[in-house]
Image 1 (cartoon, rainbow, N blue to C red):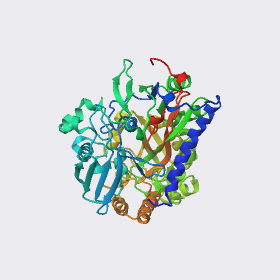
Image 2: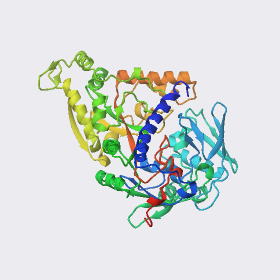
Image 3: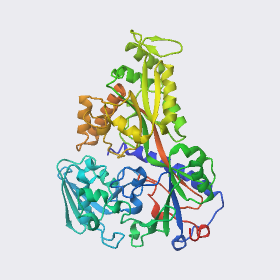
Image 4: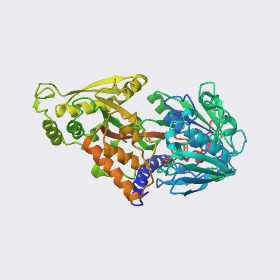
Amino acid sequence: MSPARAPQLVSLLALTLAISAGGCERRGAEGPSAEPSDAEKRGGLAVVCTQAAPESLDPFLSPDLGVGDLRPLLFTPLVLYDTAGGFRPYLAREWAWEDAQRKLTLRLRSDVRWHDGTPLTAEDVAWTVRTAANPEYGYRSARDFSAVREAVARDSVTVEFRFSEPVAAGLEPFIRLPILPRHLLGSLGPTEFRQAEYHRAPVGSGPFKFAGRRPDGSFQFDRWDAFPPELGQLFLDRIVLRAIPEATTLLVELETGSVDLCVTGSALAEKVQGSSRLQLLALEPAGIQVIYLNTRHAPLNDARVRRALSAAVRRSDIAAVTSSLARPARTPLPATSPWIDPALGQPDDDSALAVSLLESAGWTAKAADGPRRDAAGQPLRLTLLAPQQLEAPVTALQAHLRRVGVALDLRFMEYAAYVPTILNPNTRPDAMAVGSYPDRLVYPDLYDQLHSKAPRNLSSYSNASLDSAIERLRTTLPPEERAGLYGEIQRRVAEDVPILYLVYVPRLAVAGPRLRGVRVDFNGPFASVAEWWIPPGQRVAGR
């Protein structure tokens, strides 16, 4: 990564920590207290909540972002992000690339054990990567390992990978991959593996082990005392994961101390910021809300019209109705990317440009109370389909487009029906609202969004030079060349606007008044779980 660009990642983390520090300062106002010793910190139960109960606890198969959050709790990732957007050792003590990043050797810790007491070895790592690389086993990011040609344990702590092509993303794909126990799953074929009970009751290797479901349906995780102290001292006895779907209930339980930490959407940010008892932490990478524009449909097959739509949008207004922590997005890159160039963003809040572009495309006639029309008298009217949870931003978008003479008809659909509708090229409407989270922070892969051959290219956009740039980014490159390619992609997407980028929206981790030691980084809400503790006088017996 270019050293000149690394501070962008650092500054985002600094913003997150500043929000967190604000919560800590409010707590300090309750009265000073001496920091207890590590022995005094040990003990207690923390209750963590999400807004939806997970169907699985294994992030290998589950697409649920909340299940992915559990990786540092239940498993021991090979590497983690550091504060500069690089990688730091975790299960892997050290690594070495050879043959122009076609060969990778990892040296593992020797003191990590599975929660059934079996040592975790290089055989587990090699088998997990081979399994992830085989699409039949269902790993959701299998394409990240499609170049794996060999994964072999050389001894109990050394694993060697060989790839058919240079690995452009380096170690980043390994951060998301949970290492699984070969001795429990290695004999299963693809179908048996996908259906295994293991995914609902996993045996992991992380700081806390799954201890079962409680009578109220919550999940209990107990401290794993064999976890290497070098990776965390572990103060809490156990963690309970509850689902609390109703936002008002969630806030009340946090305020009263019945719940110690909740992971939720950013819509609650203002209410949390108004509390003197709660600690607010913004989770990066932020999600991004976008509008896919169907380039197969007239008039969206005209780049001038698509660019006019972008110019008509005032993204700061959309951010304001979304969350106090939302911020404008004008590029296909995630907010954490070190390759963002603000000068290459999509046009924003420029009604004069929007009108000029529409008129040059033939949409010249405009009634005072209706949409523009073309020479044949056809109105400039588009249909946008969205899931219900995106109602606020798309309603604001509708008002922005109306000002320049574009009528936007909104339709809402339940998520379960929405996804197959937009994935089918024959049922896609003019425009589709989508919210998503990036798989990578440092080396974003834009294939699914923008490559002409990607099945999830919802805009049906095709540009040969853009395809070539995306393909080149999948190879190892000098930082300067990589920066140039990301710049070329941003420039082309700003000109052609196949996708209208609206806002970045972080999720929230909200800590209640009892829980201490909470911090977040690019590794998610459980990044500091080994440091969490509850003051002895505030522990609740038997809870």
